[in-house]
Length: 502
Ligand code: PNW
Image 1 (spheres, rainbow, N blue to C red):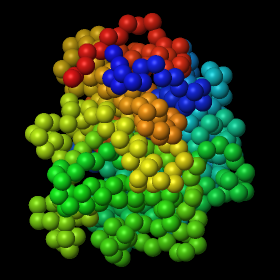
Image 2: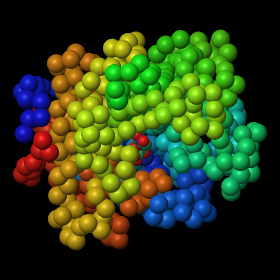
Image 3: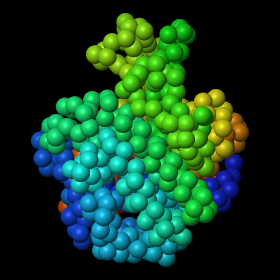
């Protein structure tokens, strides 16, 4: 069914980038194989009981470190154009810096080679949250400026070796998740405090991390373009959702602006003047580090396109005591964003079906992506030349709700989400004039969903965690058929008919 009937016959160009996505730690397993060093994500699930919802680890996950050849062949046979994946820093530099691990390099040599043999384009992320643990021991990782040189050193090595295989580069995944749940470590809980950020890390750790992340990105970008003379497009992946005001009040409009500033504006210096938005500066004061004039000049313009991981839509409202009271009170639970989000529309209806089972933040609201793409490129960052939806996706209901494999594979909620989401991306492109040049579904198959563990399933393919067999779900066929009906890929012969949610 066409969810946006006006685009039913629209055709995408051959250079539209499309495919499925993953991240090294979430799919590779083999966490101590062939000389890999530990990352924060190898230790956290083992050392801190209940840090992970189901207390699973990523030790094995989908085991793609060993199974990548069949995975790549499967992508080829499905007719998928591109694979967006990340490299494990600690596989190449087990200590984050210093000696190179030849076996880890050999693995990625083989991986890139195999992907190329299968005719699949590589879209590569250099860092997707698996911070080498040794960098905490030496200097507190992302809370220290030392991380910039170490990341640049790692990035140069990977880029020099794999640029010829790569279609597009992402330096970082979603840098605003610079917290213990994702790329940082629970300071003072397991590891000692570093750099005076205090027990628990606090927000200072998060803003130091964001600061050094953007600097590291800009350094890599400058080197890539000016020294290495790289020609592939490079950016980093942002995470933000479309946010609507809960009412027509000025306070709720300001709340929406604040949410956008904290999600996109924090790293938006690339598209503006190289600095932080005024919202962050006036709220955070000295908690927010400062860039020098030279650093701002480096950051400004340091990307070729905008990449957005956009999964859902929310309403936002000013906090109960008002924005000003929240901004003035650091112990306010809403500080520093000082906005509250709501998944129920002002008319009382929920935004869409909820993706329960570990992704309760995610509502099926595919219609939001169309105005969001316009908002980003025309209003929020008018200097953005083109935009790629670098991740979108939906999670299955809890596995306990299924008794047979066919039930798991018949993932109609996700198929519905994908079909509608892609139609809305296409509508943004052909009806609204947004230069959207790519779309990637999260995820290639079920994997380790960070603090939600292995129990939260985002895959377009099911992974049997005992046998390691993979099976495409209905959503995968829906995805393939959608691209075929808009001029790309070869589709699938599986007959998937998806009911709409109305
Ligand atoms: C992304 N949110 O993170 C990550 O890049 C993936 O590693 C992850 O598996 C995927 O989304 C699914 O969760 C997000 O709260 C984390 O809006 C949080 C949000 C969105 C994306």
